[in-house]
Length: 82
Image (cartoon, rainbow, N blue to C red; front, side, top):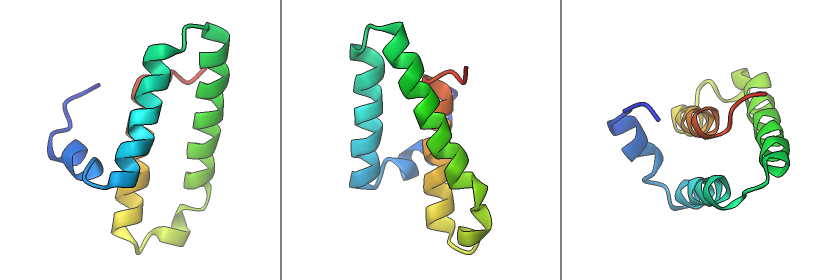
């Protein structure tokens, strides 16, 4: 993952986001089946695409926007888009 400094610290300051990122990290480290990893990566990218589909809904909510941006960075970094 690239060095994003304060961006990562802010993203990880929320306990729920920490839990999601920890779950994603553990999946990345523990799941040994490339088929399962690929299928879950596809699903994660679909969720992120859906979050950004209606990004105008939360354009005035910087906390929500930065949370989605942070999660997208994690998903893009750890789960290759096939």
